[in-house]
Length: 366
Image 1 (cartoon, rainbow, N blue to C red):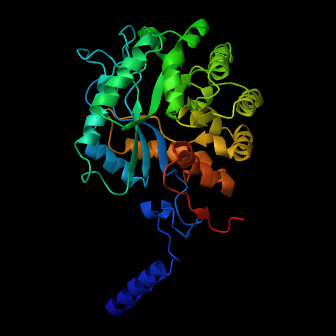
Image 2: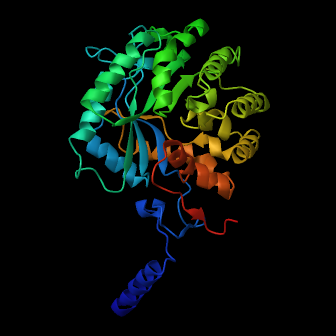
Image 3: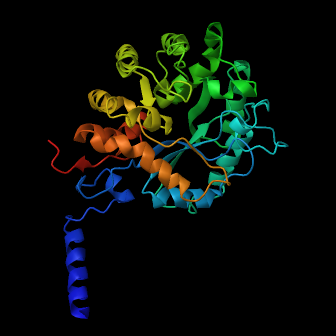
């Protein structure tokens, strides 16, 4: 038996050296990698989490190193480190806004400084070698746009060159209306011009949470996103969650896809993220709706980004992140090879940020 074990291990190692065993790892995304990704054997979950909140709404966060371990345990190698768009007061005992209606949520630069500090103090040699972190500015207060550029300059001074993304910014998020938030008035969007000029010049994606509507009026807030896209065509805009939310759980799939197709066709700098489990719970798990969305994702596969929208609150069980990866990746297993490579294997993300990585070809891909 011992001899057989040695022979088996030696055989497996020889296959690996010959490039025939492609266990999923960070090295598969190197520019000079020549192997392929075997969808029949390797995981169908994404390798990019483009939407991960390293800081919670309230209370302590999961430790930075522990969170990275959780991410790597799921074979996620590329991650956007968000703060949080609006934080609960530091003196509040709340950790989640839905549990505390009436408690105000306000934008804060504090969580961005914490994220940057956690990374900076581990540079250059104390971060895992098999992860790439994109740092995002999440402080943006759309109701006081004149404060954004000065705060960007502050981050530039303290953490030069480290922030290459902006978001998550709440344009219209109905879930936090009970916490003092309200939708940005359409006429105020023009006042974003100063910080949007800076992000455009730096090629920084601006990611927006902008609810499409609700079950009573599915397109109530569509005009806000249309106004953003019309006024800032040179900016890279990432629209979170396909515009969906818990408040819009019953939209007609054809109507929804028709809207998204029109905006993608009209605005080449628009991207859409398919994060947050409300998409699976209300859309992708529906056996009648799912095929329509698979067809849509295949047709526009170069315009989507995957992720979890996980909020790293310390009171969550350790296994929760892995559960969110599985649920938010579920739709990916049904995609064609091109779409799977673009979305799940990260090619869209690499292209968007001009990163020195490449998604491997899918084995058998034409």
